[in-house]
Length: 195
Image 1: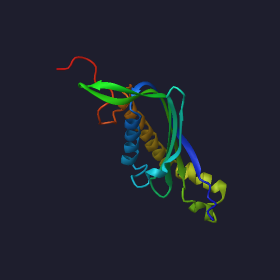
Image 2: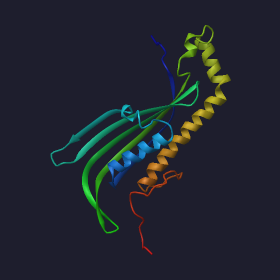
Image 3: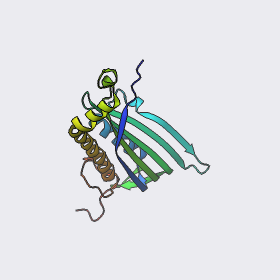
Image 4: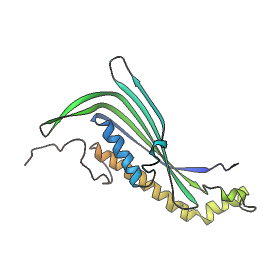
């Protein structure tokens, strides 16, 4: 029986709130693709990342949906990253938009998207069985002194990943972003005259 209780430390929490026309399916695919590309899940285990899906349809046909994704990535034997993504869609309706003379089905409404990131030291629990390192004082000293630089580097890596996903989603939704991550076309076409 594994009695290991992981010691997860929060790294950063980010939020995106957007209210306009967008594609629920397109956003879902883009976030999933980013997580796969960055090693937080793969196509074979992606059915296990969705821990919650709730959909409520009102009398007027508007939808409200919640999705919770829980992903992780082992960086080495001493550290593990956790990347939680919570989607909350509000007042979602189906609509049509015109793009380059063609009609496309889309969605209209509001999205509230949150990322919660954590880093875990000794995810396998090897230190819990060690006769010296299982002592909490010794374990804390090693984690806070001897492994501090490694811990800080790993936390910074996870911090950058969170901002990269935040930037990719912002670019997809055509919001102001700090980093340029998403390489596909934005959902909204460019405004202004065409050549």
